[in-house]
Length: 199
Image 1 (spheres, rainbow, N blue to C red):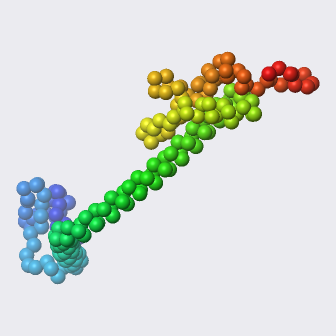
Image 2: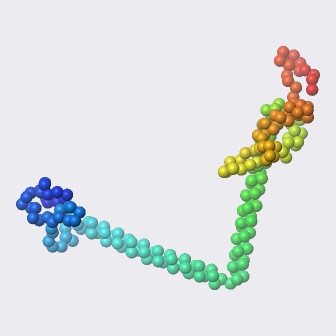
Image 3: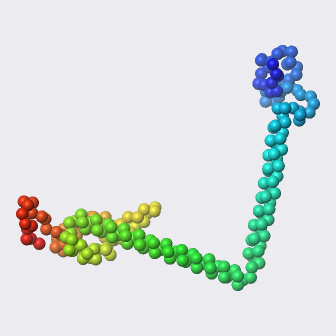
């Protein structure tokens, strides 16, 4: 039976070999070994792996130093550019930013317009506004609706910040007014005959 190189207890080691072990400060028992272990079959793969890891770390260190040198050279090079070149690069960068901001604003406006149109249409349909008056009703109320953004979510509101309502609530209240009732479609006759002649 081979002797363990390190063990927590000597209970399972033959008493004849106890003298071959020395106790460490951590309370473990370590086998005293004489001679060079480099050629030992169990040590050789570990030693090779260790050397490879050392070489890898040295190579990474050299690569890191080279990158630091390159970054430093690039920064120094930018400082030594002629003032005209720096101004030209700054102007080009500013133009790119302004173009991107303009595009973002254009898309934002299109999104808000679509959201308002959809919310208003749904609210008018829910209020039973007659089809011939739908276009006029949209024109009347479109400017009273706005889009509010909170944490990336867009919500359509009506009535202004002081009395903010959902578009459905806003249109329902308008439909109950004297003006709004004129836009509401007449109910169909439930008896299957001709439609009523009321407004």
